[in-house]
Image 1 (cartoon, rainbow, N blue to C red):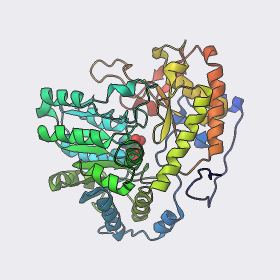
Image 2 (image 1 turned 30 degrees about the vertical axis):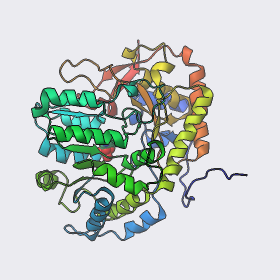
Image 3 (image 1 turned 90 degrees about the vertical axis):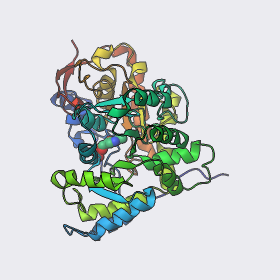
Image 4 (image 1 turned 90 degrees about the horizontal axis):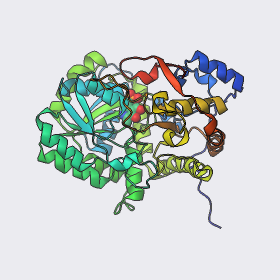
Length: 458
Ligand SMILES: Cc1ncc(COP(=O)(O)O)c(C=O)c1O
């Protein structure tokens, strides 16, 4: 008999979970203004708000913490981290930052000015926020395939070369760089193929532009290239990473995802002029150049995390769990962005809550219903997160309206996946009774989803 698949690690430490009653959850929802970001974590049973900084570190990472060098300048932990990053990416210049958006803030402060246009594939919300806050514009050039959630295609995170070319033909003088997000979080954790990265490089070279990878989930992207793209099955994840990054000029990184740490980030680049320009912003915003917002011990744990998470078995274990949850949803007929992404399942709320108009935010309503049902906290990646158009101030209803169930790395078991799927099925079975969505009572101008206050629609 063939042995079944099992995790490539065993558990050394556990954290108890608390379940709650439906009455308690109803009360907590009201107090949180129907925004799950405003819940306390101990009011949540299974927390799928994000896979960012919520994973479990390995024994080797915990051991590395003890070896951290906390020197203000020139810490050994910085050089160990820098060497690891250079080995994995080929980028020589490295600036640590306290998380991914800080890397964006530092680098974009140097590169983006008012009126600029930054094309890419579904810019992540903080990336878009940092562009728009500088009165520049983020232009989404993702392939149209990503919009059809039921279409099975291997690389729905790709950049559409035609859309990118058009932006460059019309506005080349205003484009400071092209940004490619690997994997494409906003489009459902969908990967970008090596072929597509090569196409982007070719277009960029033709127009004399540089390319940045928003690399939060670069290792998962490499896993999908290995398992889905012709010609890569026999290549190691580390070889694929080197090949991917050879097609970019620099990267911003939220290390809280594929770096397997709870906090951290960095900028890395092959260009000294970018490094010099970013340096000037790192010191006032983040800290001195060899710690940039990170403890020495956190840099030490990150170096180990990057090494571990660019190994096939680690990635296979992770993606297998996401695919297992997807297989249960298939069984229950619940629609999600197909095929399952790297770090999360993205439920297509527009196909579930068909009685709720977009003005009443179906994905946010479904997020609330799932919490109400079983204390499971997902996250709306939809119309609320899309913010308003910076010029017209209208809601942006042009994109997809997802509930993202992000799976923290090495944290929950497959039995938790069964609970999540069953809770969703219960909501799905009573979907036609859910006829009232939510309305916005208060919102921030930018990145409103974190703090928005909602109430049941009239
Ligand atoms: C693709 C992508 N880029 C950037 C970020 C921002 O990183 P951080 O949360 O570390 O600031 C995230 C966070 O979720 C992300 O998913």
